[in-house]
Length: 289
Image (cartoon, rainbow, N blue to C red; front, side):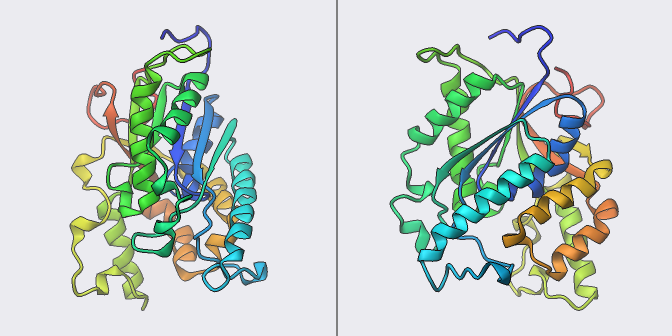
């Protein structure tokens, strides 16, 4: 399982839906490509249960189930455009059906990602790990970040794939990924964003009478890695806008774009495999390789 001499480091991302690659790792992808790293993006579902924010598409998948397939096709094309903007070297859509949020009708679809036998997506991801032999793999934590069934399933499949990839397969050598991370959003920054939005008259989760801070984001002391993405924010927003069916012109996205350099200058991660850096917080997922 030795790394080939002279081969650029490879970053391998396992995401659940089209557009997830932008929100939590868009800056990292751009920065990695600019620094000569090889980037591999695996997207598990087509996103058929996403909300349609662009009325020009004429799609109403909640009212017309037949539109869900068309939305999946639209979102895959948006994913391809965003991946080009982000400098992704290899894009692998797995093509599973979106499961929808917890409790939605889509959870019961036999073809939904959440209902796939774990060994199936894990085996497909493991084969791609052996093929690309990445030094760094990033996916979600066991809660899927915010509890989405597809994010949780992506975590389970990627975790199982890491172990499976260490075993040989016909025509493929085994590979152990040296560094593994979970995506993270700073709880402190999320709360600050919502407080600012509330001052501007917007409704936020803070208005929920049952609101609890510990349900959102990651505590500062748990974050191991903070990657400065300020030089790449314009590219990140261009990639997000490529997902026109999902982004639209909401106040939230306009506000996030205007305040990102101050409020979200970093993309954060929790390292779950790999050595601790000297001096505390890492500034690169490739640190120590």
